[in-house]
Image (cartoon, rainbow, N blue to C red; front, side, top):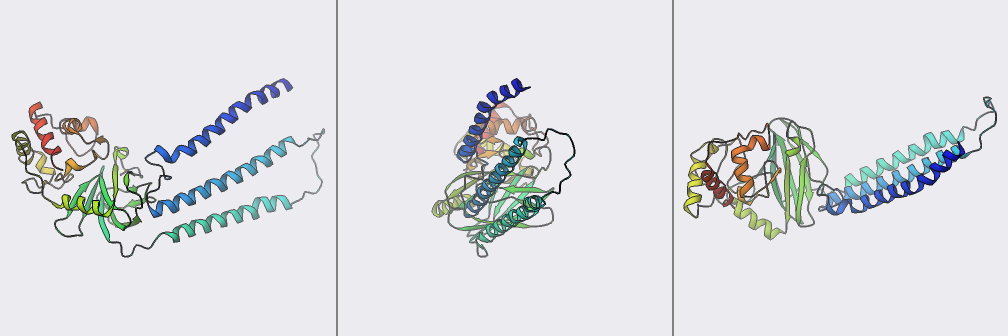
Length: 344
Ligand code: CUA
């Protein structure tokens, strides 16, 4: 018995230390590379939430250490040699303080910290930038109505100016989704028949990742989006470009691609402003070439993935509303993809 305990003592130390350092290293680097880290803060609100999270983590770690310390102390106490039941009167002070008063105080502290964090969010009643995000199985429709000129229609990508509060109206056309940009704010549901709103103020320019955070069907995991936070001038330039109609094909290959798309099956579901394609079931493709990703954030946007998506969407994202279109030849596919790529 004693040999076993000794062996356990010898082997436990390096493992414990290794695990400890792994946790410290993971915690230290969590905010550096992970695109979904809440510690990579890019907005006023996410900074408040990250502060609250650190407070909860540190407080939990302290309480955990105290509980484990008490447990170890109890295990090390010299046991009575006898197995008789000890009937001496108990001291009830410790269980009352440790089991009721201290947890009550801790819960009160957590409650106050949460309420304070919530009240610290700036009131964006007069948000100068407003737009709508509509959840679909499984992509995000984005519509900017305000501002001069035509409305902007995007998919799976939102742009926000830094330093200005934005307000996003959130709704869904099918099931409940959840809009989550860890670098900007917390999660908020998109509920069919209702409109929610989220407000935040981006503070750091960069590209962030958003994700649907509520299981919404087969391709829930492929319901991501890109968030681009730009200085106001760059945001205004982007908005002006996006309000334009689609670019005219610059060469004969792209012109044949345009004809195949606007007079073929694509036009039944997609709109390309400035052409005869006016479908509304799928994403607006007027500026599809400017987007970072395709297929609900599942694919990087380039010529190869665009070609593959047109011809074989159902193998890339089974169950999505985009059908596979195997009827096109390689030459036709390339022309279509090159035309779509040119829609910047
Ligand atoms: Cu939409 Cu999960």
